[in-house]
Amino acid sequence: MKPPYDITPKILQRISSISMKLGEVNANYLNKQSPQLRKQNKIKTIHSSLSIEGNTLTEEQVSAVIDNKRVIGPQKDVLEVMNALKVYDAITKLVPDSGNSFLNAHQLLMEGLVTDAGNYRKQGVGIVQGSQVAHVAPPFENVPFLMEELFDYLKNQDELTLIKSCVFHYEMEFIHPFIDGNGRMGRLWQTVILMKEFPVFEFLPFETLIHKTQDDYYKALALSDKAGKSTVFIEYMLGVIDQSLGELLDYNNRIMTDVERLAYFLQFNTAEFSRKDYMNVFKDLSTSTASRDLLKGTELKLIERIGDKNKSRYRLL
Image 1 (cartoon, rainbow, N blue to C red):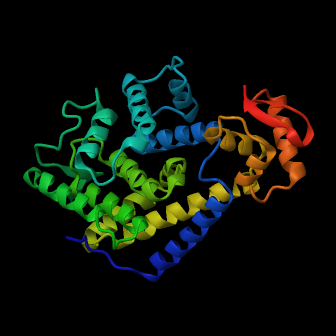
Image 2 (image 1 turned 180 degrees about the vertical axis):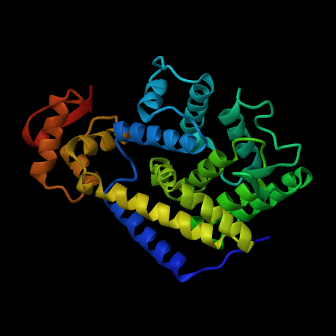
Image 3 (image 1 turned 180 degrees about the horizontal axis):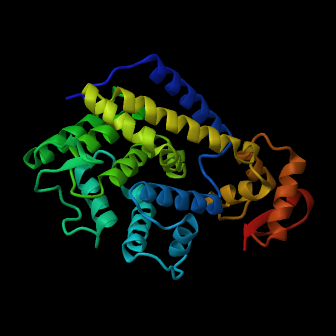
C-alpha cells in the first residue's frame, strides 16, 4: 500500500532544484570527497543527529571519540557516539528495503543503551511534548506488519527515491517501531535510501540542518500527523536536502583543489599511470594544471615520478 501524500508545487520545485544540484555535484566530482572532508562530514552527521536526541557532547568531543581519545563526559553520550560510528562506518553494507538490515542497524546503534536493541517494541508508546501527549503510536502487535508494508513500498520502482526517502522517514516515525532510537534511525535510513541512487548522500551531513531547524522538523512531523499524510514533512525534508546540497556546492567555491583531485584519483588508481590517465578522469583540466597537480603529488610524497618528459609515469608511494 502506498502511504498517503500529495504532490504540491513546492515539492515539484524542490525536486527540480535538487536534481539540478545533483547534476552539478557529479559534474564537479564532488560525489567522492577527499578522506579528510569525508571524516569532517561524518563527525558533523553523528554530532547533529545525536544532539537532536539530547546528547551533550560537542563536535570537538565527538571528533575526539572517533580518534580514540579520552573524553570527559557522560558515559551514555560517549557510547552513543561510538555506536553511531560503527553504523556509519558500515553504512554502505546496509540494504534500504531490508527489514533485517534495518534491525541490524538498530542493534549497532543502540547496543548497551537499551535492553531490546535490534528488536521491535513489545509495548505501547506515546510521544509527550511538554505536558501533552503529542502522538500515540500504533499498537505494538501491528509494528512488524506495518514495517513490512513500508519496506515493500521502498521496492516500488514507480516512486522517486527522493520522495520515498522522505515518506519512509515520516512513516517510520509515525509507527515508532522501537522503544528508543526512532529519531536517529529515521534520519539514518533516509540517508541509506538516498545513497543507493545518489552516492553523495553518504557524505552529505543534512542532519546538521535538521539540528539547526529542529523546531521546524518536529512541527513538520506534527502537522503531517494532524493531516494524516506526509506532505508537509516531504516539503520540509526536500528543503533540507536542497539547502545541504547548495552548501556543498558553495564550499570552497566548489572548485576542487589540487589535493582533492589527487585524493579522488588515487582512490581508484593504484597502478602506474600517466598524465594522460589523470586527464581522462578530469577532462576539463589543462595539460599545465594536470602537470602541476602531479608535481604537487610528488612534493607531498603521495606519488613518485618515473621517467622524463612525455614518457613520465607515476606510481603510489
